[in-house]
Image 1 (cartoon, rainbow, N blue to C red):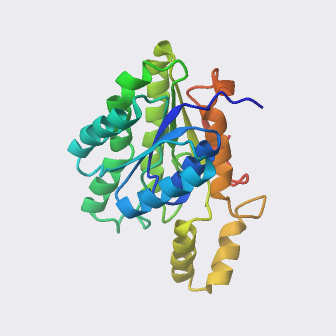
Image 2: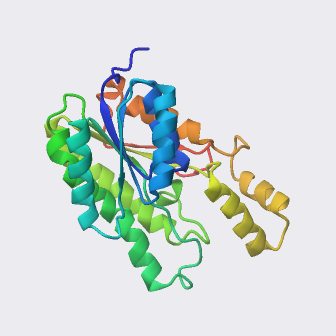
Length: 263
């Protein structure tokens, strides 16, 4: 299937590891040039190296970006557009959530994490907008999370952070649609990254059971009975970025093996 991605330029936040890196590598295989953003410059450089291995003609640009320091957004986008000359696709993948009960999460944690998502996501999209408007295939893809639709115990922060991201996605789709820009979200379920290992450890401590039993407990919620892979998320992201998805906007798609019970 021709996806119409070869030669496009994608900016990806949170590209140093995990889902963000996987998305970068999958886009690279389609011949998409990459602007890679994150806080760890060495890890970004490794993502860029792997991307160029996937497609030797690829152009990459790496730039340190810390959403807790908003001024870095302007500088990072300016420096990267100078190198790559365009933005067709923006993937907002940076961000996470502090795990715990709402009564236990300190105020400074709420403030720090919300600076990344959804506030940083909005700032990043706004900064990239003049460039996206010049593209004839502009896409914004936000990586949110299923807890935005279905909050759960010990996920007090993941609920509002991801709900805010989903709401921002819908608002941006309404505002940017007349400009020809699609905006969508992907809701990963529990994904096999370093965070999954951390979740298993924390669940083990919370329930007082072994790590093996903690993993079984977590997977009982998933009808497909398996951990989601970063590649599952990247596959969908590539499609939403493609020419084939030009009529899809303002929606959020779960990639969670059926775990989310809400409609």
